[in-house]
Length: 127
Image: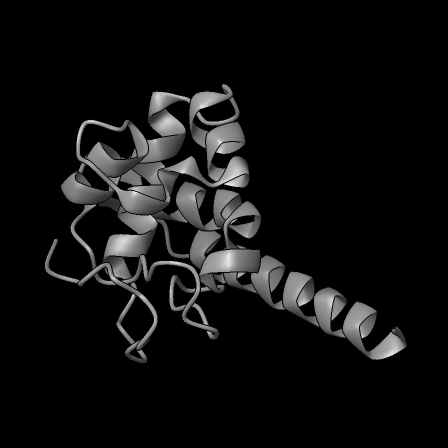
């Protein structure tokens, strides 16, 4: 039990560091601010990984996808199989993310390199 809790805090700490590093190197991509997206991505990192490359293959990989595609998926303009997940419903359709947040997150994840291929994920990077 203690190990799992410590692992969550390490993940949170790494996500915060990623946000700080991205903040120091602000760039705009696809209408969004990647540094602002990095700060907001802490909420996404538990399932999708700190850089959009989930480790367990259960969540879709966000890293390396186009910002336009990611925004379309978040806005539900483009069909996306996992948008029925309760957490995604809360973030995207529950009002937790506004249009600028979505643009910023998309800019951040579009810039992230693909570090692994998730055999359980059905979302290819090219989409």
